Length: 140
Image (cartoon, rainbow, N blue to C red; front, side, top):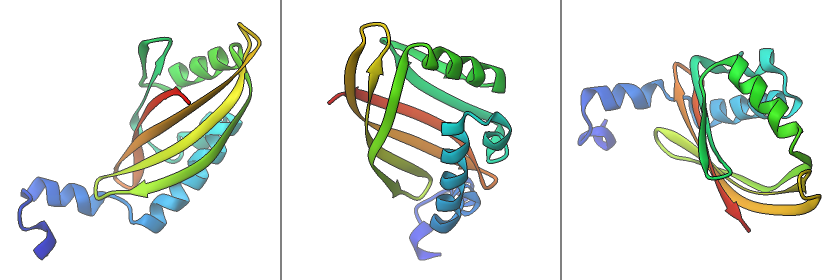
């Protein structure tokens, strides 16, 4: 393992536990389908038991650590936005994480104005499943 010579034993184990790019692509296909359908059973079939989802909303970092918290966030989001569309989605696989870049558009139901943001999401893995989803975005 010449590539891993500067890493600790634990770091090497973490990398070896991370899914391959092909496995990640399949995970993201399943995760994305479940996420956008808000199918919590299908979503939790591809994430770890201790899955963490964090996102900045109105300058407040929201951290969800349970299925109930994710479900409540979906309900809240649906009451504040509509016609949400993701475009220009690209996955960037690194050794221990995958980053997804994107552009998103939609309508803010509070103001009835269109919005457009660009962002990056950071995903980490544990035991072949998605362990973390960290979302960072800003107005385009």
